[in-house]
Image 1 (cartoon, rainbow, N blue to C red):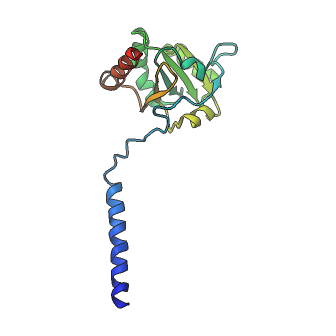
Image 2: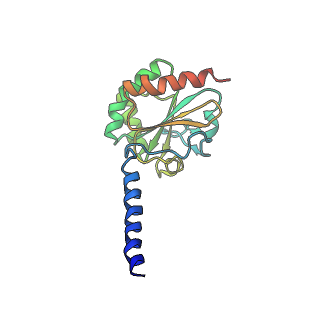
Length: 177
C-alpha cells in the first residue's frame, strides 16, 4: 500500500505535465471555426439605411463571396478598408455586416471612406455574429457558391493575406463545378 501511495501521485503528475505540454504546442492565434465546410447559419439582416436592401443567407448562393464583419469603431477595420476598396475595384463580391454599430455611424464611415461592399447589413445586437462565431472585428468568411463557409480570416485582410490565402481560394472556388 505504501508503494501505491508513492506511485499514484507520480502518475497524476505525469498526466498533468503531458496535458500542459500538449497545450503548449498549439498556436494561440489560430481559432478554429466550427462553420468550415458547413452552411452559413440562417439569417436575414436589414440594410444600413432605412429601405435599403440588406442581405440574408440565401444571397450567398451562385458565386463565391466574402462576408466581412466590420464596425465604424474598429481600428483594424480602418487598416483593412483600402484593401477591400481594391478588391471591389477588382470585382470581388464582398458583403459587409456592420457589427454592434449604429446605422448612422456605419453609414458615415462608408460615405467618408468609400463603400467596398456589394451590400451592407446591420447586426446591431450581434445575434448574427454570435451565430457565425465572431470573436472580434474584422473577420471575413469565404463562402462558396453553395452557401458553405470555406475559410475564416480573423483580423484584417492585408495585401499578403489576399495574395497568399484568399485570392487562390476564391479562384479555386470559382472553378469548382
